[in-house]
Length: 305
Image (cartoon, rainbow, N blue to C red; front, side, top):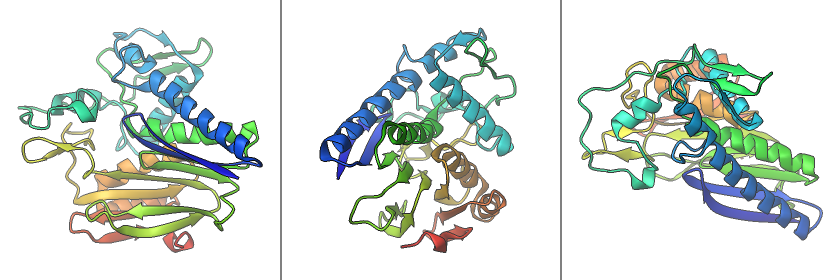
């Protein structure tokens, strides 16, 4: 039996599908997933002044004791930056605020003028995670944006927790960052994921996976400014919205947080270098350029339905 829920969380739409031995068990699992995502949003949202991320960002360089989940979030983000040579960078918060993304996307001023200057990201070099005392320290002047990696990590955490709780299978999709494990619904041969074209909205491909993760990042989804010239995919080196010739990227791998990291890095790289990056990391993906052409990386045919 399976149960589905769709709801708003982390500034986006989440879709949860749980498979269990009984309808009640599946329903309870889906509700548990919703509650857990709400809890993670309360810890991680940069728009909630009481969140652990907001407290960290306001700490002025002092260490802050945070939950295990938040320590893991910061560790994964720093790891993602290191493994991509800084192309993925979670310290772009001041860059985003300068561009006008200073509140929840649904509430920002779509007609705000472009900034006179942009703010490059300071980078992760001075971030310290102390697991002995359970604290994180951001250097003075460094501010952390959980962004997409928070959505991917949340999907990973919730699916793994659901399976430990005894459900047979679970798929959690948080705004395009998806993790699926275990038994798929009874009428499906595998977990089936539709990849949408970032420009046309048409289906690029239906993926079939026994287990794994998919993350997508589109510059076309969150745009603002009088001519929609700004978007949320910031080049950390300049602090400006990236112009790489791509409209979006999709990455297929084992963990959603890592898929999200690589999707962002490949977007900044552009089509040719982005394909090379994904293949260097041994993962598969799709890169859609501004003309709508689809470029593939790795063994995508192994996942195509």
